[in-house]
Length: 108
Image (tube, rainbow, N blue to C red; front, side, top):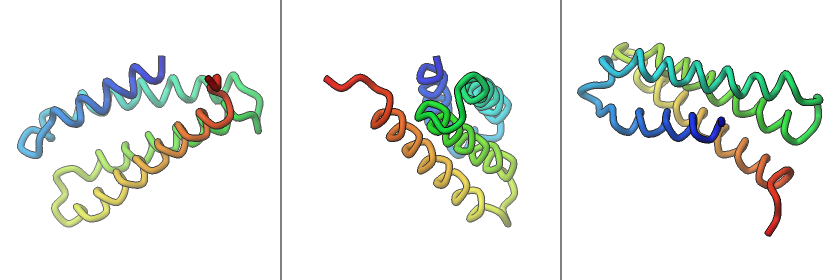
């Protein structure tokens, strides 16, 4: 569920090149909202301190960083800050996936 929405958001971001990003912004924000809501639901339904709770919490924070970056699109004075927020979100996403894989995913 979350992974499908994650892929949809990342695909939409990649498809929205620099010249179309402003037009794509409402769709990107809607996808990010859906994704954040689903990850937040996992946080709410899982016990604090469990691997799934920790991974979902990290993921929610990643999406929040992306939201902060989306808010700065078009603000030329904030382009460095926007890029930093997107990179921080990407790093947190990677951490969340690694947390999940290391602690929850079935080992083959």
